[in-house]
Picture 1 (spheres, rainbow, N blue to C red):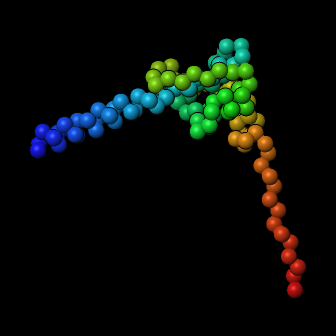
Picture 2: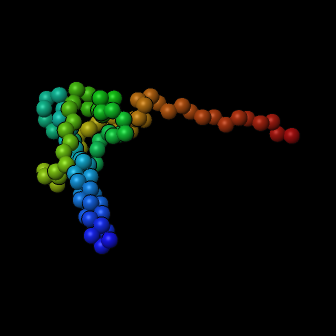
Picture 3: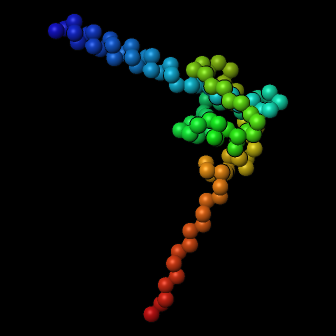
Length: 105
């Protein structure tokens, strides 16, 4: 019984260690001229969407590389245009919501 518990605990710990390796810890974006325009431990785009959908809005003609190693990511580089970072994820302006006017009695 004791062996089964230790084996199960060891399996869970090993699975947790290997699962962490799947997470990227360094994101580098190269511009069309192959110069680094972004390097940080935080992704410059929404990673819940496809990269080919989001990266052109932030760095047109750019390429993003991400790795599990954070070597070289100690110094953050951010030369991305500010207007691209301020744009909504859909690429369109958010609709303006106007309240209904009511007649006063």
